[in-house]
Length: 138
Image (tube, rainbow, N blue to C red; front, side, top):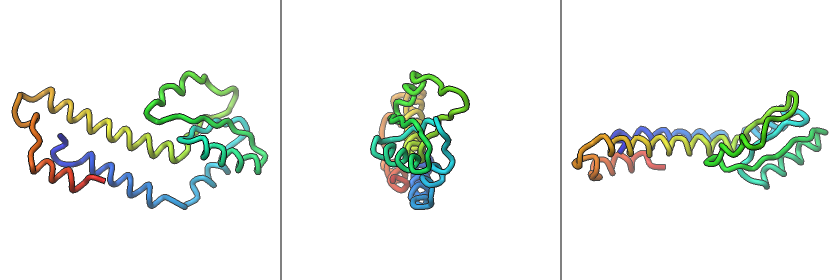
């Protein structure tokens, strides 16, 4: 258990940042930065098609890849793009990746504490730990 609630605080801060960054032109900026042949990784087919359509309006052809951030290693099976084409991650994908990694770090800390402790405190959830966790829970 993250006794101090740091993981929950970090996740909460990330969510506040993600919400405050909405409608700030990230997708427009992405579309304007893309070049012919670039590959862009998205969370959903719908968002990928939308951005691909915006690129076509600019005369740019991109490849859309849909991938769950929890399964990002499968991206390596696609090989590298030819020439100077890039692989870029959409902001929605990046947000979910960060949140997943924060959660993974929290679980790792919990596992380490349990494995490195005796049968006592680390194996029982205390009221104070639950209250601390609840303060930062998003």
